[in-house]
Image 1 (tube, rainbow over the protein chains, first blue to last red):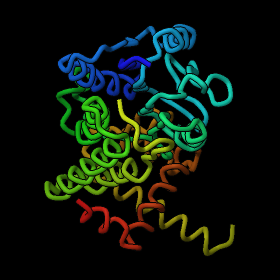
Image 2: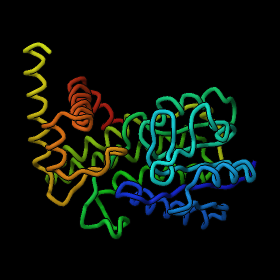
Image 3: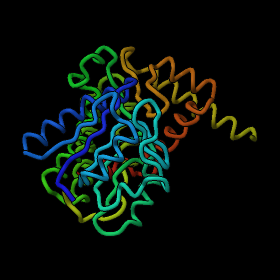
Image 4: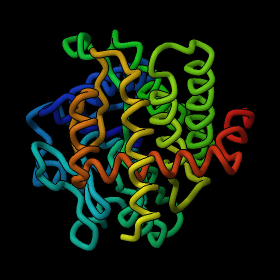
Length: 215
Length: 79
């Protein structure tokens, strides 16, 4: 097993573009901490290349960004890169964080059968966020979206620091709560809707498998 | 669907539409596979009651239930 971080960053719509840009902050953090990173950049998130890389290089930490379903994680433009009962063995003995909708419902649960050293963190509901349409050319400067995407970035950063998976999971949820309180205190137009989206991410985030494994 | 359920659904739709109306025009909701939606697109889905509209209403219902059970307050005071 190699202490390596794998990140997928498809970019084919607003959602994936935001996830991709915020993932670059995690990649920078990993590199600053001398963690080797394999960055599957936009246009390269293909099932075949990804599978080969995981089998050959055996990275411990997998950070998937993009759309998903109850039993799958997607790469470029709907291409399924991880599918339950098809190539889910790629997630064995790995820590997986999938910033994707619904993936925890079935694929995540399946990972809890893989035994010690395997952990899956993902979402049971749609991973959702509000963003400012005038900031789409530079998502990192979008303060609205940051309230949702920074707590999820922090989850990976806590893992990179070597914390247990459960600790990283809990810390990211604490940061979501802090941001929920921030939204309520600011009390700007649409506060309740913005709050609700963050609350849904908080409630929908799930952890399956080994909660005391680390990177 | 009986009359009472129809009325409840209509009330829920009105709540969602009123809340969405408070959002600034330049804000969009990224809702995973459903794409990103501005306030008028959200209202359109809710009025049509298509899959996206139903998903939005389900989330609202879940949120209202959590509010009434005190789960949201409990979450907010957990940190």
